Image (cartoon, rainbow over the protein chains, first blue to last red):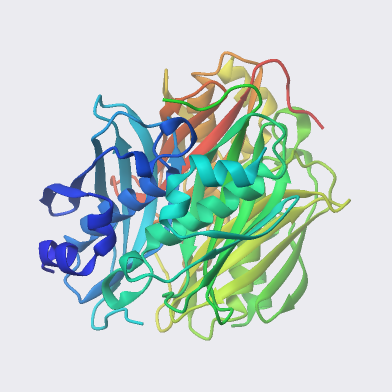
Length: 135
Length: 135
Length: 135
Length: 135
């Protein structure tokens, strides 16, 4: 998969979140998310949906590195929110735990600029060998 | 809690997602999310992070209806994505399953304009009696 | 699938838990679990692992009712524990939320003899069309 | 907490599973689970409920090492099952990810005797400072 091209051309929400790809290797992804006021909730801490979305991208991109098929989708993702996060930029990482025949399990983490862990996630991605998701 | 005021004044991401509150009663919330191209991923279907974010709001708002304290946070949320979603506007609902002393468990659903279930979530919110989350 | 035969002949843990199948129809299962002292933890309430195991069976059996293949496995299961449970016998139910091509998402509940909800679960089962899990 | 005494005197299911405590230090637990035919499902692989139960104990015991209160309960636990497990004895580990004021988030793993990862879990435990769960 041409991950860079997909992110730039087909994932407008990646850009909307201001995400940047910092590192990429087989089974691993590392992203950076900026702190922006429009991403916050009461108390000016980062909104949970933003954290989840960034972790979903980190998990999806880690999955892409082990996907030799056409497409993939998030099947399920569970996130535990540990600490209020407000010291950006944030680091979001995806680590493939297991690549099965048609599914991939990924652990994700969300860390602030001082290295404090803000959220941890565990999710599953489904690989599509010969078809692409489309509306 | 003055839910309407909080959503309008303190939750910029609620507005950014174009969410509208359709219904609200004790233990229940119903929101509407528009279909917008910038919320899509490859294949022009709604991005998982958008679905999660809308469900997080539905769960949080349902929790607010049973929260007589100062604040609350999402503790954890697990979402299973069932079908690609592209027929908006979408309906997002939160149903309180149990209100405990300091936590609330909520079921959430995400449905398209034809009534097809696109995602289901199960999450926990923590109630803050006397403190507010702040950076 | 010959569900009754599988449970009786190939699932020793089903018997060990004293589970009884009360109801079975397409997309739905209802089991009964007895209260036994050896299933309890501190305070004589039912141990979480017993609750999870019973819900795993309820989900698996609900999945069997929509599985026209050879076998299936639990892919992931998340359980929220709501109340200490000690008034047996308990009712454990599985409700199929969605049957996809190769996976099934099921909601499960665990209720005491007075109808109080003790736990709620959300899980995914993988269908095996032509192969059986074996060691 | 006197963890050894609690496990031996108040947790009959710990004994029923044949669990053995191999290692214990602040924020970490390591258990051993034997392979027994009565713990298997179709195909003679370990039943999911047994895996969950062992991981629940590993998480609970890891939580006990950071709990200076009276009691605790599993709030929620999500397990992803990765591989059929049949080569025992199995190693079950709990690692505290975060110890908050009243909740603890723990990662758990289930590995066979050859080091293959069979399941991964992410859960939350609630700490009870001054009360004990009881029926």
